[in-house]
Image (cartoon, rainbow, N blue to C red; front, side, top):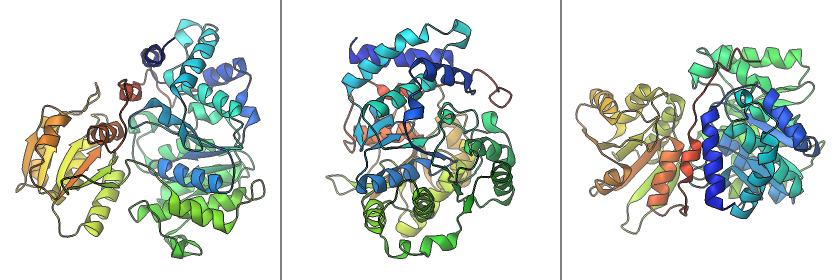
Length: 433
């Protein structure tokens, strides 16, 4: 099998859809030797900030001298971003080997219950982390938590970054319902840490923690200024990252009985952390400043808006925006359009792309004085940047990755691996148990 063939095999798994429920994942894990029972985890869920939180945790434990696995999604450019050890992407050779090894196991499933892309990748990651002798795995949920494939593990700590409206069609149409899904990662007697500040969502998390006798730590804004955070300079932009850092610090302390970490490692980890595509600033050779941010829902757009107003109060940036039609794109347009000096709206390279023409109507209404242009492609949008000093690329994460690859901010991939971010739900996850 070649690498291209392995990617094609993984891509074809999308035709089995994306569904919630742990039966398939548990069965596939059992066939693979139950690798999850040979690893230690920190399990991270939440609406926004999961990736940054995972990146901070990974760096701290790596600074402490551990071999650390990192499992996140989606990827910006290369599939290997999803499975990393000490921030080294899994190699193409290892991907081919793992795909080859898992294929016979898939024959144990009837066609109607064939494992999905995410279920297969979850087990591939577990096997790889065992083989690499990872001493800790930072383990991000895919979607939700309660019935997410990642929820077959029993972690040292469960983290719920925050609860906002997103994926309502699958997780529920209220903050309470979404909190119940995210709170599904809470395990009996396992510490849970959250920065959730919405009262109705926090009440649900508190109740789940009480029922499962899980010690709960709730972070507030005041925790972002407590030692040592008040003297740490985070390389990740945005005030919201300080709350993520407070959540990480509380998590490290909760896990300390199992894995002690020095104050020096904590400081070094937070001050050296890298996480591309999240309020990432880059300078191109023509002197232009670019800001890349995967603000893929209204809460993310609000965070981006706050960061722009603080970091660039006197600039009206060019906004290049593309998002999924199953997101609340109208709210995102209303939040971001008033800040822009020009707006370019290309389609996503995706079947789920929101219509640039529909986005244009909302953007123009939100900012009647701005020039709003639809573009046939990202490349056309990049060419129409004029002489603007600041260009903001935002929306879907793999759209941001495509732009970063085009501008050589991230290395390219020989295959179009962003297509692996595509999926469709083929059942009602809330009713599936």
